[in-house]
Image (cartoon, rainbow, N blue to C red):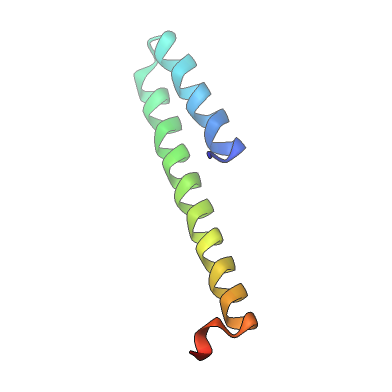
Length: 59
């Protein structure tokens, strides 16, 4: 499941590739990768917070 931001950035990268603007396409792909990384990091942090608050680490 991709974040909406990542999907939009990848779509823009595809459009830039279609226009043969390869530098812009690469920029959008890098931004999409960074947005995906931040989304995964946020999800991981939320999982840790939930596990800590529910006592899953007490075992």
